[in-house]
Length: 280
Ligand code: SAM
Image (cartoon, rainbow, N blue to C red; front, side, top):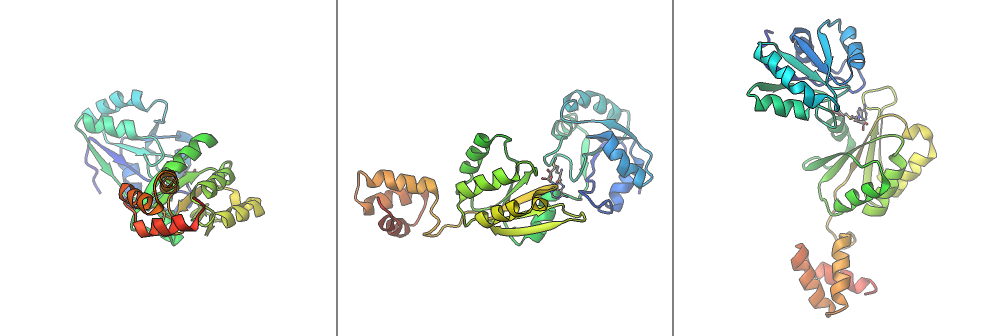
């Protein structure tokens, strides 16, 4: 394969198993003039495994913006460049956004190669709905930030995909249980493509118990997939319940249910029935 000059190639790398790289990715890495890597030592191991001798240059979160001009200059000279991150697809919870944006703005082609991505790998085997999903990446490091972000997702109906670190996994699942409810189905996929690959799904409270039962269950890299909110009488979103409770202090329940149903695009009978079943 002959590479076109003056292009930036976005090259996914394995997320664990070194064999998970495409033939095209290896050819591109071999033939480009320079490989921009998040961590040149880390990428060096992959390159030496495949006996690729291309020069590397570090491009990470802290120097990415400064690198744009010099890389545009290299493209102007007809050189071709590859961008890789430590693992998986660059730009997916990884550096590269400023580079891609800057290089496209300068009028050069950015060529994406398909390949490994932890989120997509996890979704393909989790048994959760995949017809519609949203990628949420990493939640904030602090509990208050996580809770507010999760609260904003309370009535999200699509499957939600998160990346999480082993240090925070118990706190995060605990908060998910509090915000989404004990019964919400959550699947944890850890160490994908590696020796201790585990994919375990359970209602939030059972998943938390499983995590607490064995420290091996919370080791390694992980993807968390949360089933979307389902509209039924037992699972009315908390903000809808709050509105119903508030209006029911001033109005008959029937009227309150009808107004809230209109405001939140819900079924008024379901809200009325729910109102009867709780202490308003
Ligand atoms: N760009 C990568 C991708 O395409 O998936 C993601 C990079 S992000 C900095 C790293 C996070 O991805 C980890 O903290 C973990 O949540 C997830 N991850 C990466 N490799 C994984 C693996 N083998 N198994 C499970 N999750 C993984």
